[in-house]
Length: 231
Length: 230
Picture 1 (cartoon, one colour):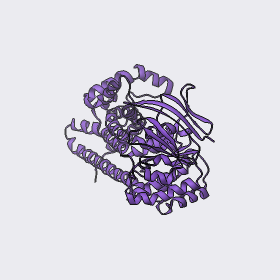
Picture 2 (cartoon, rainbow over the protein chains, first blue to last red):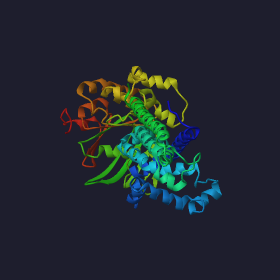
Picture 3 (cartoon, rainbow over the protein chains, first blue to last red):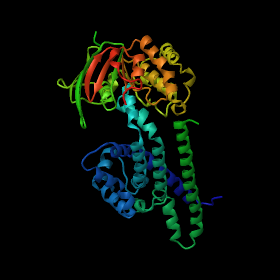
Picture 4 (cartoon, chains in turn blue, brown):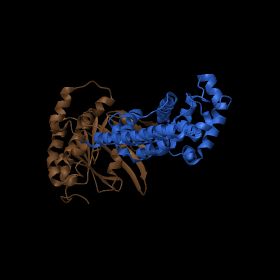
């Protein structure tokens, strides 16, 4: 059905890997920041809120540029991570995952925050009187009750990561087999004469993946609802 | 013998709560009109609300002492609390709700004790259901069972019948009387309904506008009309 060259399949596989890694790595941070925004009051909270949501409103190229000057190999954070943990972002697929994670982060945090704000905190009090310390209250009551919001956040972040273009291409360029995702491959194909036809196959794949993500989110949301309210 | 000794002060908006009483086991009624501060007092006993001043002592263990800066967190107090609205965990089955206290304190499973309390409250047929599918009376019985199964040193019941209609109140009252007589756990029972308390209480502490205005036997409930205080 999809008549793609091996190079194009590589782009598909790379896109999926980058989106999955970006989403999985962003999730703990997303839950933590969502919790901080939902449950704590401190000076500068508005600023944190703004920083988290900045990638949503900034031109993606600007986000990519900022990542480049902070996480590049010679840049302060990038050099530190390289020396101490051997993590290199620049011109690697890991850098693409970082860019996608940053771009998807606001979409992940928002539903998690809303879900945490909607939880009846009296249930957490009840859990405490039954002997649960704060960590257990969080793991056995707060987190399961926020699950529908977490699922929505994960799907939105994943979808955003899958389609990310501007920040990724600015930060880690467009290297086939390393950082060339579906979006970047389509862009490359449309830049050469007669490439439109090949781009068509990738476009179909992109539509199929987006649709699958939507269906998966609806299925997961239904399952979460059943878990909560019974059949 | 004194089981619970409480002497606390707390400013709650316009209400200045200053409450002092002792109980000696059995079922102690905290009786008074809405807004008298009854729920705040039990929340302080449970550790969910911090007093400004004073102390709370249970079985010779200091739970709270403002001058000595002692404030045992709620999860270490081992005080069972049955809330007005039940507060069952909606994402767990009835069985998981009942088992929650045991799991959190990592005690070994005690099938006998579990079955005894399930039988006492007559909730065996509900174990695999979700809380949402229970009637109000069933929900409160499960909430009582959940609090009992954590093996509490003290049981707090905050208007456990207030959300129920008259028929369900009649349904659940006998279970509470049985609980008082058979479980052997001291009870603090909050209500503004004198009729309910006449069935359950062995001693009465009467609150009005944040102060204790009388404490003693059931005679304190005399002269209050059957429907209780508004």
